[in-house]
Amino acid sequence: MADQVKGPASYFPSIEKKYGRPVSEWFDLVRSSPLTKHGELVTWLKTEHHLGHGHANALVAHTLAEAKQQS
Image 1 (tube, one colour):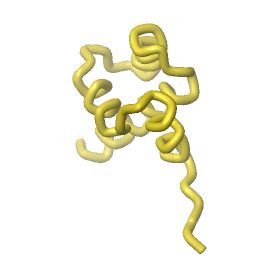
Image 2: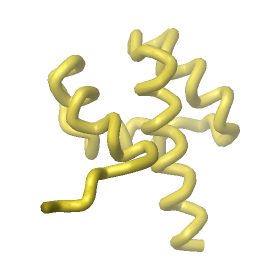
Image 3: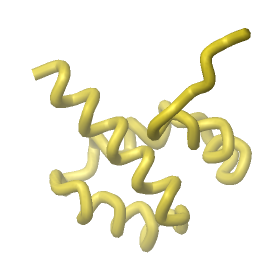
Image 4: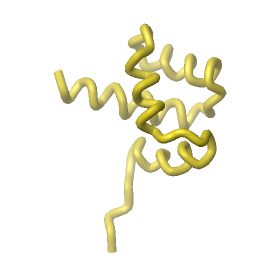
């Protein structure tokens, strides 16, 4: 049996299904934003792109964690 996906990545299939875009596009959007703080990015995704709070939070958390690992 495969391990169940946990954390922010557990939201990715529902994000793709609900918003019709691959999560890679959302990651690129977050990376290209001039905003850098978690809360600001979540608010931006919610207001400008109409994502729900949980989905926006998952995308931002994953993208910022990934950037932190690369630095």
